[in-house]
Image (cartoon, rainbow, N blue to C red; front, side):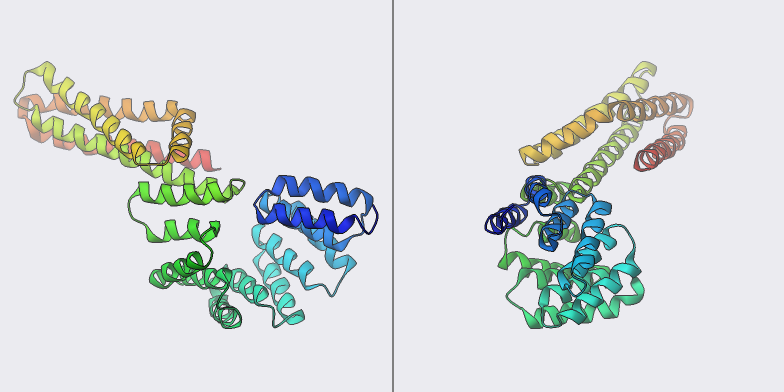
Length: 341
């Protein structure tokens, strides 16, 4: 590739990265690297693209190629720090981030990165906080500096400061996907609000695997909450049917439980944006067997408890219903633990 053509490839790849189109940026860069395999700048862009795609091992290899070609390049050490952090190699990431700051001490992005890397280790939170504040002092008009303050504050469990910092970042750059994602989780609130925030972040950067994982966790919590709502309805059904004929003692709690969970899910899903709703439905469909098994187990055990309440009316049922809750919770825990492995 000629020298006149290479800047065009780099410019296109950089624009694609800024738009969050990491797969296209990777293809652009790798096509250019085929003609110029010793271009440090192209390897740096490839590392960024791979990081966005979640391929952190390859991202590290590209970053190390940059530092091999240009040992004094702060950009290469910066990409090494990012990749090492994603791989959980925090001490090495911290050393790389500190080397980045040493090479370019007046460059604010390096201090913001150092803050985020250092915050990954509770022992270096003081260093992280100092780096975040220094980044803001160097560039208060940049969203990423305020984001770094929010990130470190969250790790320090200073949630009020974290929310304020993320809000400042979004006031400067409303399309800051990671700030939007973190703010949604930091604010808490009901699950539908969290799902909307994480879903909005995912729309801004649809290739972020960590955003999808967060949305899965929110959907999972929604399902568990719906399941607990069904248990409450079942328990109320036991009480409501204690004076009813024997067949109604069994049928009424089960019916109330099913109506409760369906209504809760319908209301929750209706409050979500269409894209998040589709994600939630797909999540449920992928785990339909587990959901049905838990509901059937809970309904069956509670109905059995209600039947036991016939001679003594409500008291035995109130003993059996918590037992069904315990069995169901164990089932949920085991299922999720196996799926997360």
